Length: 90
Image (cartoon, rainbow, N blue to C red; front, side):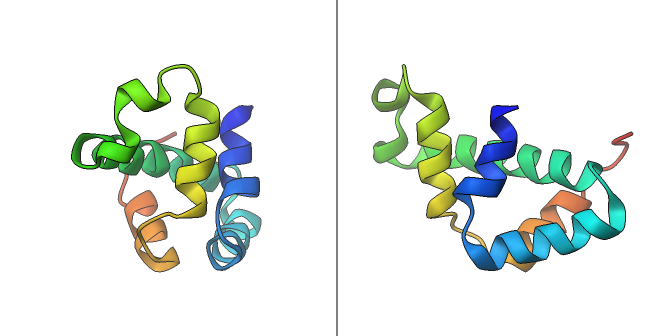
């Protein structure tokens, strides 16, 4: 259940408000979708940014993901758009 803390403790307040609004309307699938998008964004950032290189985060991936969420490079609307673009999630 660590992935839940990426969303609840890591994301900025504006992101959290939008996600929780969707969560109350749609259910738990919203949190799954957002967690998948966070992992995808983190992976892309690791490939392009030296700060997030695998050597720097080798033993502390959980804290690295929370730190990444605090400085997430997308707006709340883009995050939710990417989350709801995932097809076939049941």
